[in-house]
Image (cartoon, rainbow over all chains, first blue to last red; front, side, top):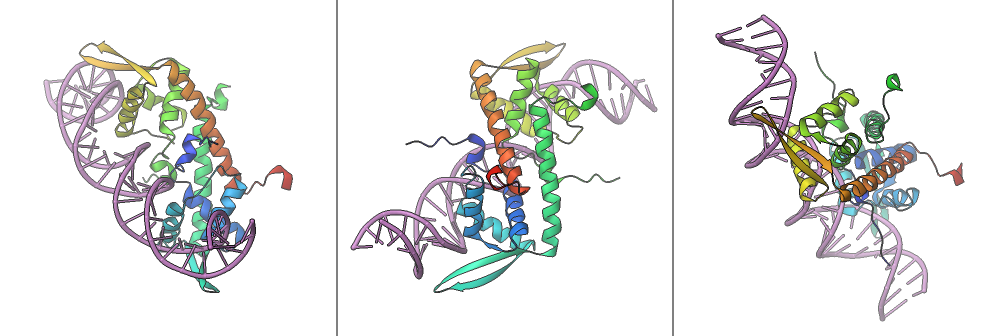
Length: 120
Length: 120
DNA sequence: TTTCTATGCATAGATAAATGATGTATATTT
DNA sequence: AAATATACATCATTTATCTATGCATAGAAA
């Protein structure tokens, strides 16, 4: 059986991943990487699949930038790394969400040819 | 005076440009590059600015892929290159718009925490 | 008339984000 | 016992966009 993959979601549109991660952390308090990827898959009905090769580097980058902090937890012999937002991270999350939604609105208005109200 | 540039629109989120070009061509029949960049700037109130270094390579790629055709027009001593959609280009435009809007919806639902109706 | 701005296309090199592929390991289910 | 799920990691590749630069004509302003 073949899975028809939408073009734009094949490669996550660049710029959305960090915002997705940040908002999930804001919502859930703390999460670990694998958990994030599961939740995104579940809540988007499999439409968005974050690859490990994208997720872990993105988390490391957010950590380097001071947006999130980490806490390692032992799981028997395995480890799990929980992340949560820092204070700067909370502000950045807010800004990024506004920015992204605004961008989506702008592009949608353009491609769906929704003219400004003044022309309606 | 300083211009505060939104993060995500600084670099056009990758994946949106070709869709923008295609929809404008569908709407206007035929357009040339410079005209496309002007119209995008005008209709987005300057929020989206397509750079020449992005626009012309994108047009050439769409041409190579057979999505658009070109027609060179002499303007005195200058030239202007008009593009219009091919038949495959029309179908692709439709598909890309649906795909992009769907992706936007999915991401927005995720980051704005709009749960599926079944959970409401 | 000179100069600045707008029009118009083009390309080479840099950047960066996401992916694919691969690796290691433990835990759980079948 | 084998397959699948959990859990993190990294390297090399891809590719879309940007920056910077270039050339050239047209029109407006000074």
